[in-house]
Image (cartoon, rainbow, N blue to C red; front, top):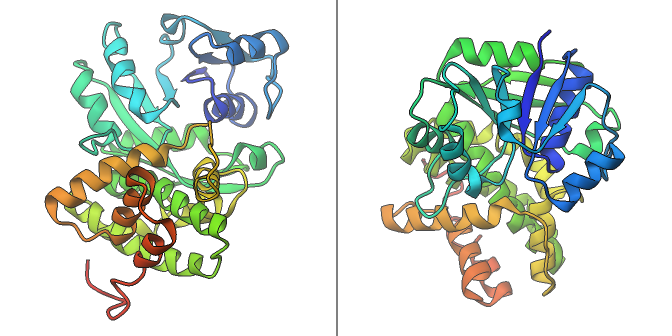
Length: 323
């Protein structure tokens, strides 16, 4: 089988390149990243903190060197996608498929990442998205999981799933291109809330968080025109164990350290997504008490214990309020 390319040499991007090279029978996988110190070290040692690169993984520092493949995975910070898309549009990429493997919404307007690509790339391309649970640290140990791939185009979805399917990750066919993107993005926000509960040692409220969060996420999905029930699928609720409980979750760890008054220096996508969601929820009067309370804590220095308690006070009389 022909090779694929990955843009983004961080933890997740490098794993996806490794996964394609070792689990999907690819002839070669091209990996591109900005030449950071970490990436240069990986070029020299052929490994990072999580895995050792296989011989069929080729590393590049020029994006033009990886655009010859027809299937390209993107795994970078969500807020950096627009700039990358503008750069990609300078090359001949017509007809290529881009799988967006990050989970977020662009602030300040809570723009879907697929929309960012459509706005900036003025060539006919195909777009798919990846969502669902899984951590690099578990995958490299052989711990299996499931994920969902979605696209507006059924044939693109089918091709991506058949190309990436393996015994390690079982991919499902997504049925809500909008809802799966929003659900995947907002699970990072809920991960921060879970981490704050861990930091406060209010573990008993994590069950309530898991019960209430998909309801308000469903409201947000509905506003964008998606199916609110997608909040209960793999991209959102199905990712809760990996995001709300795992020690490997950046978003959960960010929340825990925030509650303890400590700083977390790694990327926590939920921090940026939270701001975008709050803007839209306030403007459109979408009832999202968890996200709105969390915003006051994270961005406005509201009293953490009092505000976090308030997240669960507003819906107690009507548990199954309609979307």
